[in-house]
Length: 456
Image 1 (cartoon, rainbow, N blue to C red):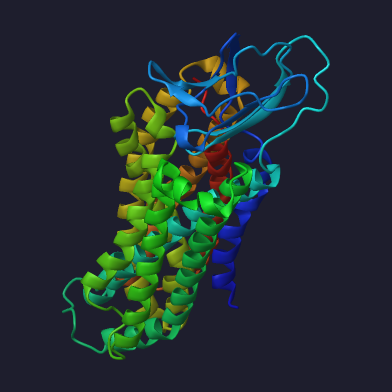
Image 2 (tube, rainbow, N blue to C red):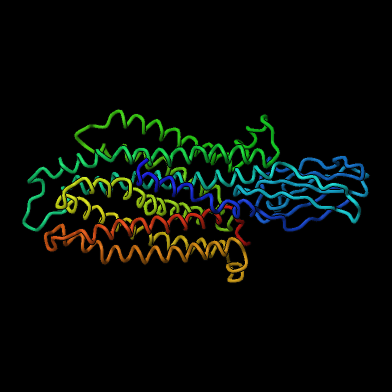
């Protein structure tokens, strides 16, 4: 495995650092109230009625509660009927799936008596598996979409344009495109393997999220249809699965049709390979925290734009490591400058737009989800958001240095104004790798945000 491909594996695997935290923070129970004929449980987010389980036991430890239903006046509240004539109720156990895909489970004594053992429904291990699955889906889709965007509309566009040439020199007056095509074809296999790693991560994430949620809810094999057909999480699983499978089919077909003379297939292939993971990212916004905000429609759109901008920026950084930098290393100095300089400038423009979108949508989502300074500093969600913002600021500083200093030096060298590019090229490689390390840390914070309930 090449060093470049190792960056992709590390970027996907680094999510695991956040899982012990994210798996422990879910939708929370706010209050419990009991009446002679029913019990009411209110949670921090709307719940999926078909997937909720509430068990109330009597002194003989027999379950005396019926199937729960959502209060028509409050989607956050579940009501379970109690068998008539029951007294001295013992332990209460519950497990529910919120509309944004988070689990809440627990048990307590209802009355002031000795309830015996407090039973728990479902498997806590399933919580961990589901959390791993969710972050693998996100990381895989981000890298998939970003790799495609970088290859087709950044590096490919720079190659098709003939690179950056000095004033007075005619583009296409030499064999630059042929020479650079050889270099790009020589590393496109690494690009495909990186894309495959990302696609496998998303596919494994679908399986882990499905199996983990089933186990966490204590559901059997016969309940698969209920999960897939009666919840937003089920729709998310189906949409991501379809996107991953179709992307795999399209990728296999493209590899069989790639023309040896050209490192860039037609744009329709790029649109297909980028559009499928983008659809999955939109589905994650539709089924995530944004879907439970008071302004759900605007929040979902903002969150989807945030995810897509993240893919363009962070996934594009991975593409620089696995495609552009290795291809440049295969070229002579003049050709390397002519290809790398315009590609880096194009990516800088993409990154600048992405950062602007991230700032706007991130600010809106933070205000909608956190709501107060106290929640920002005293909740897991708020602290993870602060860490993410701090790392993001450092990444912006590094990106600004690249845009103002390194990109200018590369352009000057490519135009013949500075014959020596070695310092700029080396600094660019180090800077991109530093940005990827920071991106990995940012995504760890994102993983914690995914697993933490927003303060309401």
